[in-house]
Amino acid sequence: MAKIIAELCQNHLGNRQVLGDAIRAAATAGADYVKAQIIFSADLIYRPRFENGQIENNGVIKTIKRPYQPEFERLQKLDLKPDDYKYFIEEAVKNNVTPIASVLARRRIELVAKLPWPERTIKVASYDCGSYPMLHELCDAFDHLIISTGASYDEEIEEAARIVKSHGKKLTFMHCVTSYPNALEMCHLSRLHYLRQFTDSVGWSDHTLIERDELKAAQVALYLGANIVERHFTVLKKDETKDGPISINPDLLKELVAFKNLTLVEQKEIIEREIPQWQIMLGQEKRELTHTEILNRDYYRGRFASLVWRQNWEE
Image (cartoon, rainbow, N blue to C red; front, side, top):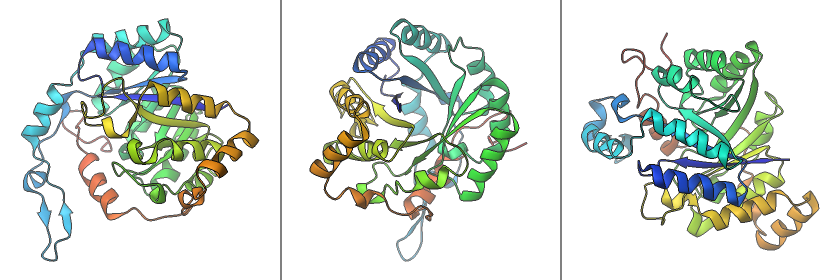
């Protein structure tokens, strides 16, 4: 049976009460996992080239503009304390949903590993699929690595699989598209088949726009055999958080869980009736990153520094 991850991201607004409400709502709606992002504003790096960005003479963006100070101030308001992450775990366990997390800076692995996880599963953001030293350290601390691959090149995916297998740990590869939001025709869900050459456990992390695309991509991914589907989740209004427009609410999570629990025949009937053009989501099994994805990779890979300000991928 497939599993559903309710990704809480920073939809908690740095507020423990909102965090608790989201955990309880996700559990009530039937999520298998609730996921926290272990982010600390103190880990954000000042990188001069993103202060003003760069646009070529022909108007093509070469480097996105995202100045350090406004981003630091935004993240600082969303910071949770280490004790809040312990609360996150305890509240999830109390509500019979499994807590997991993604760690964005390698220097925080020790802190995260010491938390009382009931299941030693960790999520790796797609920008760190190629952060090999980080993967080795995560394998030392956890039993199951769920690695997003959306911003990664094929050779990075291949090496990540080799590393995890060399440690004898369970591996799940998640396909995603690192455009926020991405459109249905950009999903390339055939990529799930490509990832299965490395592991029997594959999934889809969905960043489609809720108002426009609803649950369509997640439903098709489940029908195609995804073992895990991840969706951002919120108990707030869509305009109250940065990730609100791509986050599902409790009612939509219930709907997704109900679809997951249907038979394959029942899923097919719904898809063919309600998403007649669903094949547009299949795309290509082997594909190139789009210009937007390359720009995002350039910014987010190295956004947070580790180990005396070295990058996650540096020895």
